[in-house]
Image (tube, rainbow, N blue to C red; front, side, top):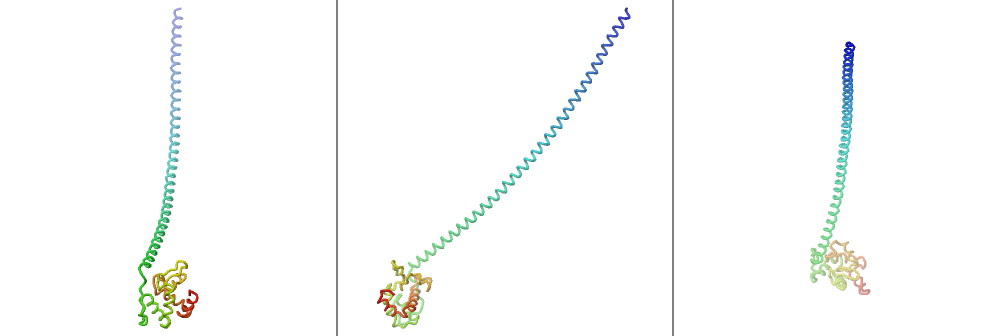
Length: 234
């Protein structure tokens, strides 16, 4: 009886030890499983982090390339705009320069014309024959040029009366109604430019033109004066 009890106690203790050992073994196994699972998650997380970092780097590289392209495009656009502005400014400057030059030339021309009109007649520098010394001013010049044209001195009284009636031998005489101008009263006055560009202020230029007109249409000063007497003009 006593022996059975001892064996019974030994069996219980043995079973208890077996359960304890089994529990320890199970704990170790579970711990290993948990450790293995935790390590796998860490590896996956690390790989995912690397992938995310690589993707971030790619995006950043793309953004940097886009920013570089945008800066380059903006620079090219700015250069084109600056070049266009320079071209426009250059054209405007040339146009302003031309307008200013034209204005200056026009002002100079008007100034010269005014000075010529108000500064007196252009002096005569030709020779005056002794037979013309009894006359003065434009009449004296007319006498000298008439003789130079080949007319005899006897023709001068006719020329003197003709142009005295027409203009009073005034080189600036102007008919406001008809536009006739100068000593011979050329109509229009600009016709006399064929004898010289200074036809407005040079009595000699006007007289040369007038003598050519008289000779071409009436043969002589007396022929022109005779026509004038009959018609009131020549």
